[in-house]
Amino acid sequence: MRSVGALVLLLALVGCSAAEPKGSEASTVAAPVSGCQVFPADNWWRADISDLPVHERSAAWLSRMSPASDLHPDFGPSYGEGPYGIPITVVDSEHRKVRVRFQYADESDRVRYPLGRDTRIEGGRGSDGDRHAIIVDEDRCRLYETWATRKRDGRWRAGSGAVWSLRSNDLRPDGWTSADAAGLPILPGLLRWRDVRDDTIDHAIRFTTDETSTHHLWPARHDAGSHESRSYPPMGARFRLDPDFDTGGYGTYARRVIRALQTYGLVLADNGSPWYFQGEQHRAWPEQLIEDLKQIPADAFVAVDTSGLQVDPDSAAVR
Image (cartoon, rainbow, N blue to C red; front, side):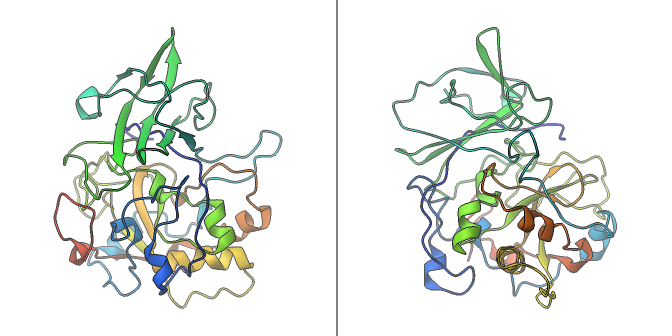
């Protein structure tokens, strides 16, 4: 899906506070993952974009993104094969850490990673897909992510790997990838079942499209497109659902996701099928919710200009 990927291993989510997805004081506290905040309250992933101006290139970008499509939730039940989505692994600080050999070592965090027999890998270890691994060290609130994760001849290997402190807004060096082509963490952009169930969605959601530019927008750090023209969408572009979108006919859970798409939006994070958006792997995803989300049209979105949120180009903190 990308020319470069990145490594992070993380989480299993636990406990979310009951917060309104928009406008409440409680919504300024990130839903915890095994007791860890998913980055600080002022992090870009959790910025309310409902009042931001439309980006001047919105129409051009959308014209390159299969605007006649509908959204496609890239998670949920997979009949006969168990649920699909991106799994999260939670470990403690005593978990054994191993060396990982990276294909893109120059842009990877070359530290030891808490990979092991308990590590859950997207699609399974025999998959020929992205094989993301997301791991959260619940004691240190540290996030590890890897792309193209595999174990061969007794050694762990990956396309790339990245590590974050979940307590910090620090970004990767500009130009570096991560487990995502955009050089961003995957965890904060996953739709999580507990957040939907408890009505506590407080962040933007990661999605993909097939044709992207060779540019990226803050806080993205990397791009993997093939088009120099800025009329193609860049990594880090953020899209907002029409605030007047008619939710008639949608179920309660779907309306919660729709409200989040109007408040926090979608983030272009990788190359892939147009308008596929990602969630955690979880057995509880309701079939009706997945079907409802497939009815949201792409042409109900606009790209917004998030540049006014920037405090520091090397930080994901927002004004």
